[in-house]
Each structure stands twice: as C-alpha cells, then as structure tokens.
Length: 99
Image 1: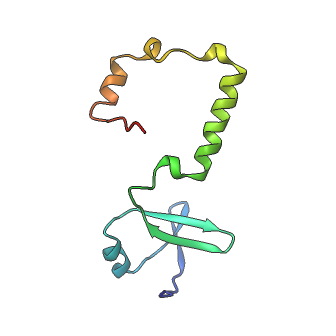
Image 2: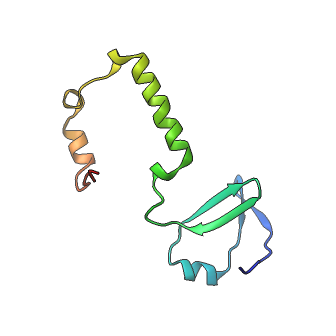
Image 3: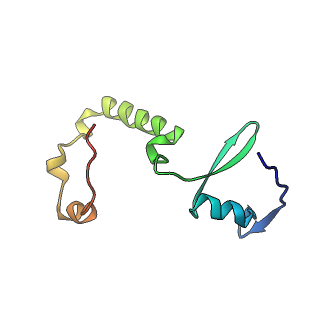
C-alpha cells in the first residue's frame, strides 16, 4: 500500500485534503467513503453496496422507530390511508426489491 503525506487546509467551515489525481482516476467515481476508526481515516471509493442500510447508525435509527411504534401503536396508520398522488410522483421509476 502506498503512503502519501498531505496537509489539511480550510475549505469553508470544514477542512479538506487534496488527493492525488492518479487515485481519482483509478476509482472511476467522484464520491468516496471516509471510514473513521480509532486508528485513523481510510478513504475508499463509494460502491453500489454503500447504501443507507449499510450505515452503522441506520440500525439504531430503525430500532428507535420500532420502540416508538411499540410504545404508541395508536400513531400507526395503514399505508393506504396516507398514500396520495404526491407519493406516486415522488416514487415514479423506483422499483421495490423484494427479498
């Protein structure tokens, strides 16, 4: 693995780092994932398997929704009661992957 030293620089209200053009060309995408651990930061290309469901915080979010639903079942509604044309337009062209 190649190690390259770079300096952080201010970019708006954040910090940024320049990555080598060879890296950008080799990953064939303009989106990357930063994997932050106690040992450091790893930059890798974003792939199709990087979805909201793969985010570690997503499981906690779903768990919180489930707990709230169990505590307050009276707040739950049948999807047919809340579905309207706006949802149809929003989801036009989106397919549901059933497992």
